[in-house]
Amino acid sequence: MRRNHRTTLIATTLTTTAVLAAAVGCGPQAAKGDAGTPATPGSPTPSASAPGSPSASASASASPSTDDKPAGSPAAPSASATTAAKPAPKVLMSNGSKGDRVKELQARLAQIGWFDDTPTGTYGAATTAAVKGFQGKRGLPETGATDSVTWDKLLGMTTAPTAQELAGRAVNKPVAKLDARCMTGRALCISKTSRTLSWVIDGKVQSTMDVRFGSQYTPTREGVFKVFEKSRDHVSTIYHTAMPYAMFFSGGQAVHYSSDFAARGYSGASHGCVNVRDKAKIAALFDQVHTGDKVVVYW
Image 1 (cartoon, rainbow, N blue to C red):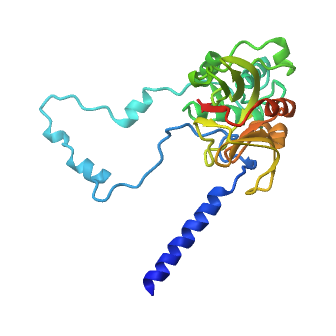
Image 2 (cartoon, rainbow, N blue to C red; image 1 turned 135 degrees about the vertical axis):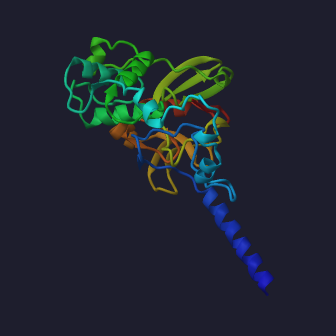
Image 3 (cartoon, rainbow, N blue to C red; image 1 turned 60 degrees about the vertical axis):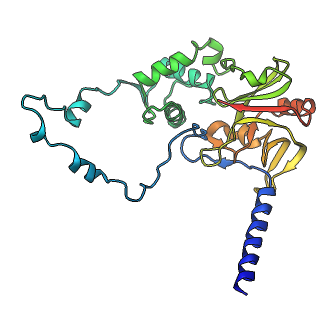
């Protein structure tokens, strides 16, 4: 009797898992952390210490004391001395700053998709959040203030803003570097670095559009996939939100138009889908893409 009961439980669990896996759709979500920035692949996650592994205190006690060192050996520099030898980078701009340099900062951040508003020359909450997200993506301290290290990194990734950019009438984004896997056949080439989708046929770019990805908790999968289903007026079966012009490529993850992305920009995130905010562009793309076309998601 117990055996039959256990078999029933296992069968029920497998059935439930299969039902959940079959559900598709990914609606918008408020970003947890920095402005909907996707997590960097390979980021280490904390894990519990293995049973029986030596503790920090045990390691410390096992290390030789200064009494065991040969006479005349130089003492190792203390942690405080090492820290003191590395001065903190100079803060150039921060919340409350104003001026042309702030406007340039905002225009440069816009070039790489971190700032969606019109450059104002006032360093407020939106600029602080944009800088913080930029810093976190590149492994810098997430202070939200623009220090010399952050500024130099930004200068190296962007170009001097034009008058049109400083006025908020244009954004000159760097051209996305196409992955080698996009250079043959028909491919939706999706770069997480430039946050763009390029529609490529036989190595030639047909159109490009801004995209947004999942948060670090619901990341967009990377790799090579194929469009296996198209749904013009799709509604998420999980989140019950509209996903117009959906092109599914991996489970419930799809490329689709997002009104939330159009309204909030990068201050939000998807639940793993690739959001497009230009409705006209995604509508045109939807009509050109065929089931079976390649999808490449890469950094």
